[in-house]
Image 1 (cartoon, helix red, strand yellow):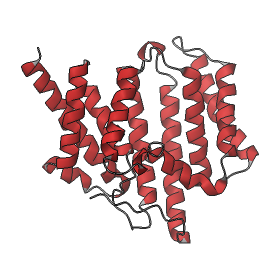
Image 2 (image 1 turned 180 degrees about the horizontal axis):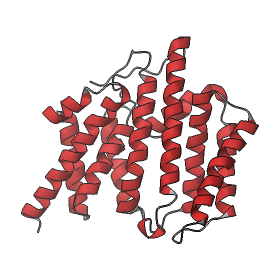
Image 3 (image 1 turned 90 degrees about the vertical axis):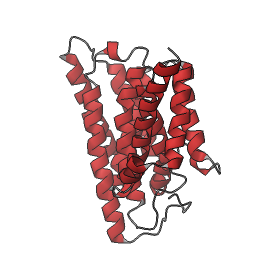
Length: 271
């Protein structure tokens, strides 16, 4: 069940400490994914905006570092950025399929500095923007449908590839699960209505499974909204997982059902 309660800024020391630990784990998880993706062959990511991805990745990563470790000084931020960015380029230096780049390291630093400039007291708001998908979660009724439609539009109307979507999904799930758990740490909310990153993840899951035509994608959209709103038994079971993982899991299961259903319907009636 969705609620509309806003995040509470006045939390106990114990709750803030617990939230900090969750963001620390998120920082470590994101760092591991970034290092893993840095060795992915370029042929798996055709047309990827490499510099933009570097900047966005390090903005989110350093915001997570600041929130988790409560470190806001420029020296710490530059050190973390240089270590991780340098490790990425060092890994790529020894790969035949990738190429190290000083330009990428410079963009990493730009992303880290932009994250440094974000006000320390507004870090929770930064993550609120992420999980509400830049505020879509506050538009009013039907925000889940709007977030799902945006995901479909970004995939269908931009050069985003299926491989890119597949690699981005674990990042979205990790951020949603950990940030959702952090926002629930005061135990006053369960699946708030403004949290729509779960709809993005569910729609991405459905997209990955259906035939890559507009009819297949529209089937995925319609079935995902049906299963997400109706919540059949497997979706309800997934929703019982603790913290932000329950928020994410029910939409992932709904997306899985929508993808399978869309594939079956497409091959039954449209081929």
